[in-house]
Image (cartoon, rainbow, N blue to C red; front, side):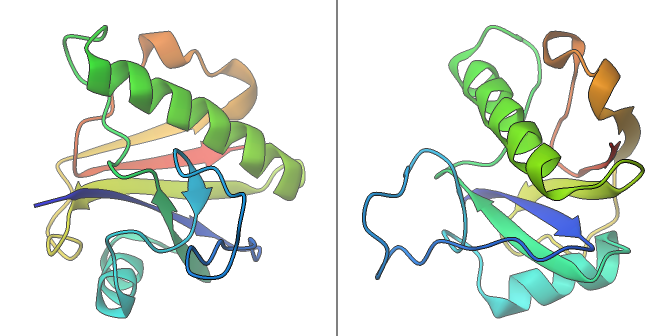
Length: 139
């Protein structure tokens, strides 16, 4: 099984098509990796309030759990940092985006946790985001 991360936004974000785009960063991009249209529909219907949904592709979802210095947690913190940087460039002040990570096929399952965060005050190193955590991130 694969852990996928999704974002929901009210703005359109360009996606990478790994079959056509050259020179993309395969460690982090917006575009299909594990998910198909059914997964995107399910996560949008069950988890998000926004108009657009995307998979954040990195060959493993964003999952920050103890131990916080594990390889997965450290890589997830870097992915989250890059995601925040990307979304900062697309969102206007007062806008938000949603983040959700789960195993493929579990997009419609109940959330286990929920967080609301402010981009400007966010300390990635003090954050815990296990799977099935809905995160609302405000700019």
